[in-house]
Length: 442
Length: 100
Picture 1 (cartoon, one colour):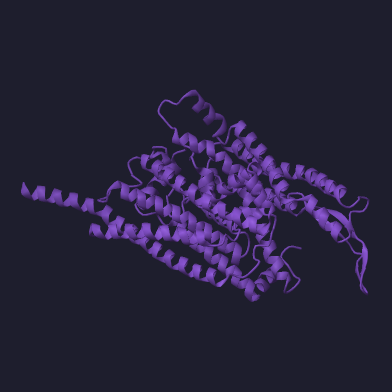
Picture 2 (cartoon, helix red, strand yellow; picture 1 turned 90 degrees about the horizontal axis):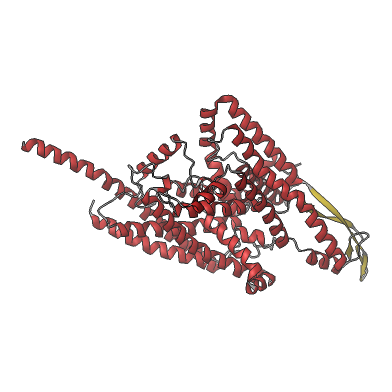
């Protein structure tokens, strides 16, 4: 294991990539703690301390978790990668609806690049919307649920207010653009997928302080219990992530000129969880929308609809929220697999090179067979994702529903962290394979 | 600290923000993020970055540094600005005290 790390650092291009990724992460964390112009850093810290003492549930907890605590402090990278994720979801869902996008997706590389470009534009549009929304929330004090009105987050200065606000919104929007760029740089020149690496960083950055809070509030035994649950979850995640079904493929022997090709038997690996952690990220970012809408509509005497939505769809401890969350994860798993896994294409490729699954005719029957297996294997995969994301939460709610609020040790966060970690290590390993055969995972 | 300082910084900040956003959008989206995951593993690192892309990187970095400097400068200005009223009130209290 250690020697693998050593050899990863001995390989010059890999070392460069790893160091580059670490550098980007450092920049990202720096921007996440740097307050935007016009935001009083001291006051924000006061407010966060007030919020942590009171037991009101933080509103944007999950979002705050995804941005690594940057959101609450209205830092330069406060919005983090959330707008980019939302934009990707919107465009992916639109591909099903709008024929033009569907056509682009089928075009291959060029069309894909165009869709990416649309996603980037949409990201910045969303960033403007969200940053002005958050600045408005912060100014009215609702970001901290009016618990902290004594310390204005955006204090009055000798500048006119609108100038300060313009500067704030502009900075945060540009900051979102920079985060997007950083992510792309990591994908391009570093290791792992940039966006997931950045999410991973944000969640990991919250771990020490949250762990400390738990240790303080629950005592050593409660802390040990939580760590044990987390370890079990990690083991489960790794177990399922590595699981795959191998579909045998036989290649026919062919003579081309004087040389013999094919005649080998191989397999198509079908992972139980083909979708990775993306369904979880999608589901949780969709579910925070009701919360966001509620906070914009907050008033002193809420209507009955407001109370209904708040009770059943915005409270992470209610049964309806948890059920909806699980169902969304299952939906997104199927959705994602249906987009990424194309049985017809694989069957056509196999036919072209003279391969077949023993006992199944090449062409359409093979495609049907692969589609059938894929949809059947995704069923346990999606159930597993939903279970891991939901079950620990149930456990923690049973333990102490107050403490549950901003919780990086919940299933979602652990799932994302382990998933991204595995993905990244695998990528490093495949690069290492080009030089030597010893890897991290055996 | 003169108010003109803050105005200059804010104008510079807004301009650099706009330029930075534009430069970032000019980059060929390297399919970072979710859409590349959606793309079904079409290899994105097809070609090394072109000369244009390299220059673009350089400009973006340059504008980014100016942008960051503006933010830090404004942060420092705000800190001084917030410290000032407190000093004013003590001065007023002192003068009131001395006047009496």
